[in-house]
Length: 150
Image (cartoon, rainbow, N blue to C red; front, top):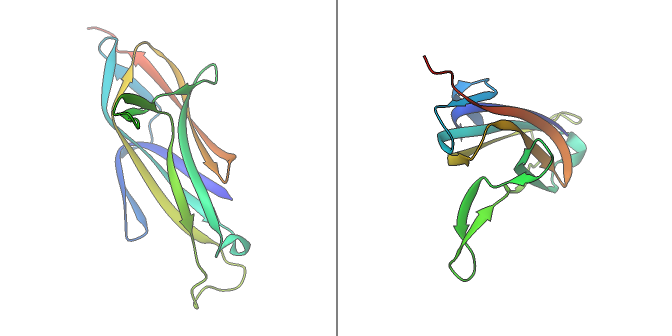
């Protein structure tokens, strides 16, 4: 499967299309560390071949540090109600074969994941990794830098 992905300030999927604001960047500038980035979105189009329609697929998004370690993208309560880091987002999707689909044509699935309040303790290079069915299909580099004081 082919995946086209990008970073944006905000994105959502409406009626099978991605609507994005502030798309196409790869650097976050912060005043000081630690920092919390108000909002970012990772949006993607997944091009599903005709032969992979009518089959369930798993989509996963995670953030890695420059040394390849998973970086927490949020916090949620665990089974005991204690805060636990969220290290990946995703879910299951299936695209069918509607009657108007020509044999051999691909289907396109759109996704948008919004992350609010992503925290960074220091500057660095990160990579958003998109996987389909456990196989890495796309990487988006993202640098976090301290803004120059003027």
